[in-house]
Length: 218
Image 1 (tube, rainbow, N blue to C red):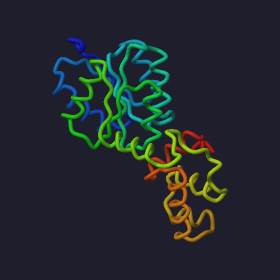
Image 2: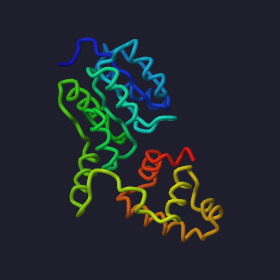
Image 3: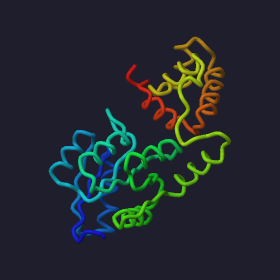
Image 4: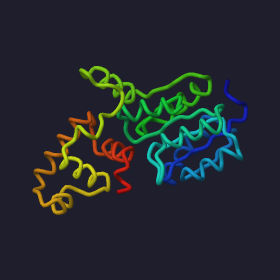
């Protein structure tokens, strides 16, 4: 059931993204009460005071990833619904988000109409995955022997681990090559091997994997 006066919390560290979400939410729910947060501490403080009906939660946040924050939100208030929002969808991130208590996963490439559909469905007790999220899960399930959990770091060689660490810190190919005293072509080869071994499709997914394993703190 959709509340007559919907209370929504948007959690994203980019003001322009929050502004766009606010516009889309008010177009669908003109009477909605909208709060904003740019970090995990701000989000938790707002939830303790405002008790929103729905949280739109970015996967990538400064200091704490959105999935860990989703777990903390659910622990603080089982009633609140969570819709994860991400730039891209990889199978492990989608699966972790759902296990953390999110009711839906939507990429930022979708229209305001799809966001409205997702919000209404979640508020009515349904689960929603955007087509990209569904496709990511299906690809993972179709891979022989692939589970919906990321492989352990032990599948990577020592050099691949070093390259992944550099990628997680935002270093480009030339910088990594200089730092590790290898050629740019070798860096690209290592990156391709890392993606294949981990079953990930892009650098953003590699970064999320590295964050989960504490590489960005090293």
